[in-house]
Image (cartoon, rainbow, N blue to C red; front, side, top):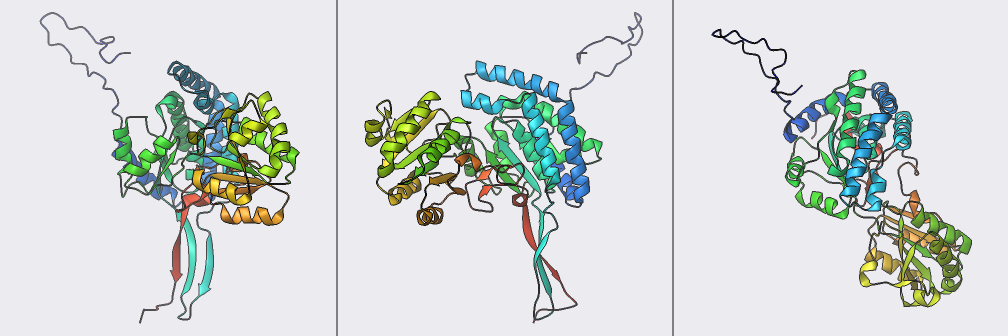
Length: 443
């Protein structure tokens, strides 16, 4: 019924004083600061909870997700239709999907987080000093997390589950392209928290707004303890440049695979296909293949044929184009580029040193891999390549919290404070010193 409707109001008789019927007012959305203040209050309560209470909230969340699969999928369908009409890329539309299968996978991931050990309260380095003080380090929640992300509405649930398990409140600021899906997910979160008697402000979906509202969120020192941006390079740079609160950065994923001289060609082919073709629109997809010149003739023939079967365009250096005539000439912009598509840059290099130098110049500190039979060269690659995850004879697609045993992840940090690589539960806590004494005073 509209706010201005008169239905149900008694009409006054001519000449009589008309009864005044109060007109319902539209609810006022809380400001960014009010949301953060409520989150701060909820965080204080969450920090006191035991693991059982937090796990109960997560199991309730998994149940509510499954019960709401249809309305989530319907809202997601509207977001996808709007995204297609707006001309979003295939990669973005892929990340935007949250149909029934994704809802089920997300609910299962929440249950995985519930089964993980609770890091809060764990202690290490308990030692007795000469003066009798007992010193230990204890893990405690960070407080209030501002999660700022694009597309991927499942991040709304993954981030909420991890933050709740680690005792943090979270402000979930997704992008406009997933606004309708995130709105329904916000209702699911509130219902789940309310069911187990926890404050609904512990996990709030902040409606997508303009950049000014994001700047306001990033400036709430004293209320927000950490901002985590997850999305395109433009979003991450915007957050890093405008934040007054600490930021964990997740820049683009320019992931390389180096094929060493004498490598197993069949293994190399499998690693390339998995890294490039399985899901080309994600941050741990393979974007550049480096091939030792002694392996190039044999390896590239097999790999190029398999890539062509999957519709992958190769952009190669001059030597690559000699061996793969169908390859397109690579430009300077193709080295260090995150294609997020069925496009792969390929360069033939004279040595391991040249491969490492290329990675140092064009990599993004995300994921780097080597395919080799030589243990010494493998160890050198691990020592000298600076990335949040380095792999030997394994696909770049493994740089993922779930694949590396963390359960769900809140993002992959490419900065080194305070986390480097996939951020799971432990990365959403910090250590403090706990000191027990018997009256000691400093002299």
